[in-house]
Length: 326
Ligand code: ACO
Image (tube, rainbow, N blue to C red; front, side, top):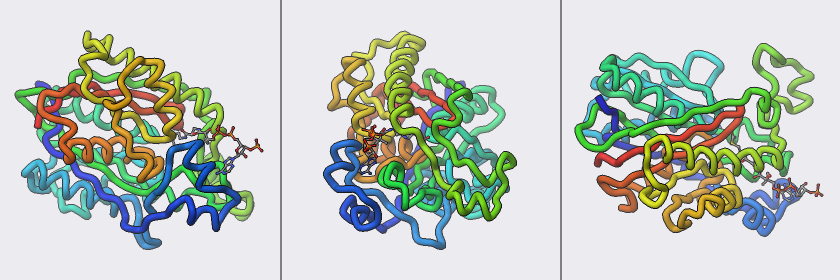
């Protein structure tokens, strides 16, 4: 049985933070941010909103587009780098918020590659016949774990959520997947404190260790390498030429990462979906939001072959090759 996407949804908070707004908070400039990253705007959730709230809104849109009721969902997999809490799983909170009372629910932690890992996992449950309708959500309120005193990171991230429903399909679907990880690079990108290695204390708060820390230059090089490698490998695995791929939807971290990888792949840049100018890096939500927008605006059509490809903390990376069903 082949799994395919039968509905998608996206939701971003209304509040927009521009580069000019950030100029007032840290020592940065619109010119630096736009030239070095491609980001112009990002969204910010209100103080009372958490990741499961955004995830639940995206999920409701995906359910409507799939013509399903919440009770039809058998499993929810949520990916988030900014979960509501360490436990319970954000997926359980989303389950309650949307009323998916027949669904099992768990989270996947693969940072910005989380959505790719979650889609890959969901596809296995459908192939084996264990579950029929699976909701996959990538949801982030990164603004609450971003250090707005650190110009190296605070200009990069934004809040948002994307969701898809996977079911058995008789046309198209998820053709193949690639996942990878290298834990030796775990310190390049991390949120150091609040877990069991450094529980929250006065010192961890004082040292601002509850915020994202990143060695940007090393992550940059890693990202360009794996975006290229992963895209090439998944096409080879599926025995498809890159010429026959209609769209690539990469993780939206930095336009220079995307452009460098796409150049190495000799792939036409007009067939790469980019929305990071509007939203910044929304971690696990970046790819599903870009996918939803590309479908809603008529770029992606039935029969198109699409590669979703991501990278993130862990280090992790992965790709899904999909023939679009809708
Ligand atoms: N405004 C102005 N200057 C800045 C800013 C800023 N916001 N941020 C850094 N700088 C300065 C630095 O301090 C440095 O100054 P110095 O030379 O005086 O020390 C200078 O700009 C150059 O810094 P670099 O780090 O070399 O800048 P670079 O061109 O590499 O861009 C960036 C930095 C944007 C962070 C880039 O390295 C990058 O995009 N890295 C990858 C990020 C990424 O993909 N992260 C997400 C991974 S996914 C996940 O799991 C969350």
